[in-house]
Each structure stands twice: as C-alpha cells, then as structure tokens.
Length: 300
Image 1 (tube, helix red, strand yellow):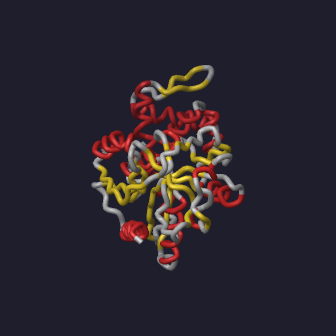
Image 2 (cartoon, rainbow, N blue to C red):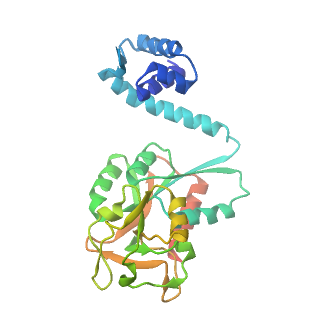
Image 3 (cartoon, one colour):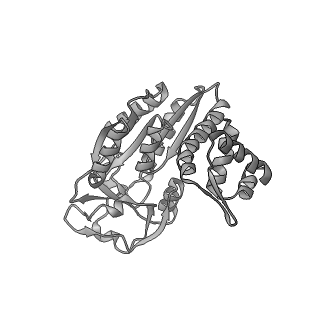
C-alpha cells in the first residue's frame, strides 16, 4: 500500500467523482480509477459504489476513509515540515484573540534570530481539542464557558489531555482594539445604537444574559452587522469602522478610568482562560517558553 493510493482514494471520496479528483490531483481520470482499483484489490473489498451519477463510499469504505484521511493529513504535514528540517518547528493553537496575537507578536520579536518556524493556528475550542489529541499543536489556548465545561471535561478525559486554567474573567463590549485603548470607560447608555462585529459560531451570544455592573441587561443580538472568523478583519473594523465587539474581558492593565470598553457580567459565572496539552506528548522548549510568556503577561 502506497501513500499515492491513499491520497487518490481520499480526494476521490471528498469530491465524489474520479474525474473531479483527477483535476485536483493534476492527473487523468483513468489514472485515478486505476490507482483506486489497485487499492481495492489489495484490501480485497470495494471502497466505492460506482454509479451513473458519481461514486459513493461503501460501509467498509467509510471506515477505511476515517483512517486513511488521518494518514494523508499526517503525511502532508511531514512533507511540509521536511522543508524546515533545519529549523525548530513550533506549533501553537489558540482561540481567536487579539490579545494572544499581540502576545505572540512580542514573543516572536524576542526570538526572531532563532532557527525556528512557528505554526500558529486559530480555531474553535472543539477543533483545538481535536488538534491537541492528534498532536497537530503542542499547546492550545482556549476559553471555557461554564455551560460547556462538562462537555470539555469529558473530551479532555477521553483523549487523555490536560487543561490548566490561567484566569477567570468576565465579558466586555469593546469599542476599539484593546491594544489601542486610550479613552474613558463608557457607560451602558453609550452602547445604544452601536453596531457589532462578532465571530462565527459566537459563544458570547450563546452564553446567557449579559449585564452591566448596575444590573442593566445588554442584548446585542439584533445589532450585529458583521460576522467574521478573521482577527485581522475584527481588529481593522473596530479601529476604522467604529463597530463594537462582545468578547472576554481584557488581560491588559489600564490607567484608572480608562479602558477599551465596558465590562459585562453573566449570571452563569465567569469564563476560564487556560491551556491544553496532551499528556502523552511533551511540548518543545519554545512552545513552553511561549506558555511562560503568556502566563507572565496575564500576571502583570
């Protein structure tokens, strides 16, 4: 069995057609069909149902796909890393966060002369758990909401991972990027009429009722103008387009009476920020140094 066979099989399954797979793989339909057929001969069972409208996986094909897709993904990653063999490859996962992005930027400045290549992947909490499980990332920084904690704890135990909480925090409506904050802390009344930019699959909207310190209810669900998965778009539109964003409270310290927005509270409790590691895998030196950098930045 060769990696070429697995690649041709996985791509064919993904696109549901040998002809479309040929386009993706820059080869011919007959070549894809022959390679997949040779794999089926070795396995001694069919992987696809050949139909007039295309192909679909058999039951055994579905089971084989789950294993083959992981092998192909790992092989592609090894090929990518092979070009950086002379370097120390560092893999860090994180929830979308301008504060963490800024932390990494400063950390990189301190290590720019080292022979290292950093892979920084931003994703949802559930996807980051899966990446840590598969050792795609050495460390994953996540926010855990009280109502989703039982699910997170179940997955952490199931996959033999470890979560370490670094800080419990409230929410905040940001009126500008937190690394540019230099205005008076607003009152709840100043939020009226604002338009918001929020992340895809936003947990802050899902998580119950947000209130000010005075108990005033804040509901932004009808005031969302932009939904994005891009930190860059988020930062730029907070700065240039005067949008607001509901997110976790800032780790940064500000002069008394100043800040990036209005702190909010939730009856369900505070959000925990922390990091994930795989108990069966030891993060490298630079990954651990970045963890220490984040930890110290929180404590400042």
